[in-house]
Amino acid sequence: MNASAKPERTRLSAEDWEDAALRLIADQGVGALAVEALARQLGVTKGSFYWHFRTREALLQAALERWEQYGEREVIAQIEAMPDPRARLPELFRRVAHELAPHRVYAALLKALDHPQVVPVMARVSQRRMEFLTTIYREAGLPADEALNRARLTYAAYVGFLQLNFTLGLPRISHDEFDAYVEHMIRTLTPA
Amino acid sequence: MNASAKPERTRLSAEDWEDAALRLIADQGVGALAVEALARQLGVTKGSFYWHFRTREALLQAALERWEQYGEREVIAQIEAMPDPRARLPELFRRVAHELAPHRVYAALLKALDHPQVVPVMARVSQRRMEFLTTIYREAGLPADEALNRARLTYAAYVGFLQLNFTLGLPRISHDEFDAYVEHMIRTLTPA
DNA sequence: CGCAATCCATACTCGTGCGTATGGTATCGA
DNA sequence: TCGATACCATACGCACGAGTATGGATTGCG
Image (cartoon, rainbow over all chains, first blue to last red; front, side, top):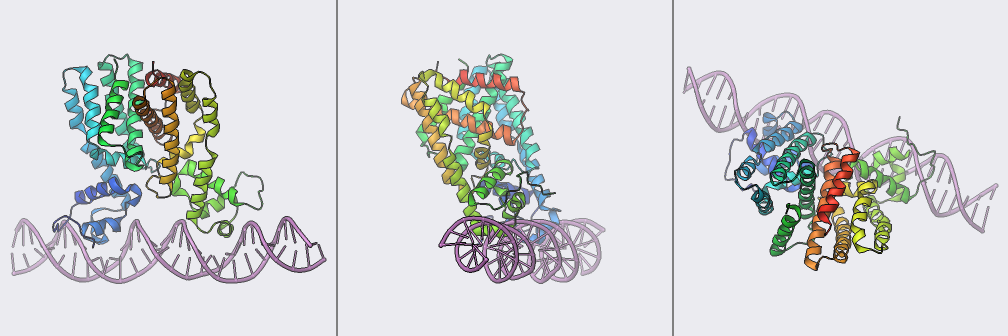
């Protein structure tokens, strides 16, 4: 009945637990991160867990650090490699909009900002992304202060979108309508 | 040591509990809504609580409904009373930006969207606000589809802003810089 | 005044989830 | 092959928060 899909994975490592934790966080939230639940899901018992980690808190910490390193560095690198600066913004928007899966952990962590352990991680990640956005806006021709504010606005729109769609299921937008929304966003937020 | 600031409030009513619950939700989140904690804060014990409410769930429900009715109807009414449609958007933005206190409950509920009880409430409230925004954009001269998408974008920016500032304490923006941000937002999101 | 209804305190039970203790089994190198 | 190390199971203890039982206090009303 528990049925972990993983085919007979005997003998686990700390990384296995961290990955499982991130999966669980992604679709049930940080609050649902319980060791016995995780153990069931992995087909073992608590006894295993407390060999790899000293405490539940330690697992969370490890999982968060792992997630932070996984970083979407490829995405950033690919965007930066584009020759025409004006083309970077639309490309970034479209890319993020159509690959929402990797952002599910971020959305979940967004809802756990009262938890002391996630705050510094989210602060660092968000800060880095904001700086990246600001740079792109500068390269697209905006003056420094305008670029910063536009980056703030854009990132806020991103965060708000995650909340309103993943977690809340707002007007259950259709695929075509979503594309239209993305294009509207690009027209509105991209400097002329 | 517990020290409720309220001056000798003997004899409570259900509404007192609901208000206290909303205050607690506003600055500690839905997860922190515990009956014994609330009781301490009100200077009484659980015995009182379970006279007014059948369960903790019932309190949450009542508090949510109370909050939903409190509604910011005055704000909407005042905006709608303005004669010049083009002036409504900037005014709405500035007003919301400078009266953030009433939005703290909304921000807290945003982080509790996994909780089944808050989803329908948030869905209704968000829906109403979105429709209001859409109407304003229409009156400001945008065609129907553009107005809808612009409303989505604006509301997402609002939601994202709440997350990034209340809960996360992002770059701890200064007052002047915040005003500049708001004006930038108005220029960017308001149809020319 | 006196009696109901209302409001609250005290003292429990009970489920849940973390962490510990301890012993068992698999794997690998010498 | 055999012991050491790595990995896991079982069975506990313990804290915390929801809900219950019951009796005491306070208020309004006849």
